[in-house]
Length: 82
Image (cartoon, rainbow, N blue to C red; front, side, top):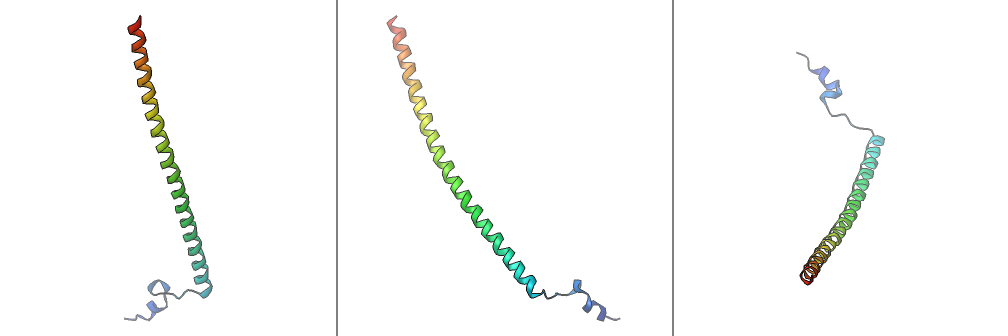
């Protein structure tokens, strides 16, 4: 049995990448990491804005409930006077 032919086949072994390929891959990976970090920061900003808006909405809802209660009380008082 002859196993010499398997040593020549790159599918069976680790091929050493060229130096230029390693540099290109490293630069590409660094760019991807920078893009991911930038996207994460954008998401943090959007989350902060969303939380701020949610608090504002909750205040407005509370204010609307208070106003509705006030209107209901005034309506009942007006009905009693007639």
